[in-house]
Image (cartoon, rainbow, N blue to C red; front, side, top):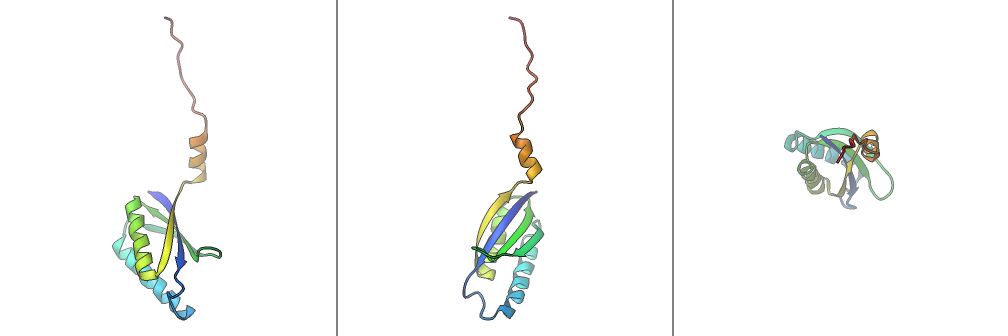
Length: 107
């Protein structure tokens, strides 16, 4: 499983009154759970700035996350940006110098 960040910007006309949004969010969540059972939700945040929602999910592949994003776009009336996230410790391991076990032979 890989971790993905999904950033969503809601369309200005996604709803008329903010009290409508929890119902939309519930419907989108139920659709994703039904259609994307291999995607596990880790966290969701309301954020300020260029995006309205930040979701952290674990998924077996990019195709699963792409399907989630299409559901968000179609039913949640938003645009999405998806980022692959690498745990910090794993990232640092990739940057560590490799130990070589070269042997010196005689010619």
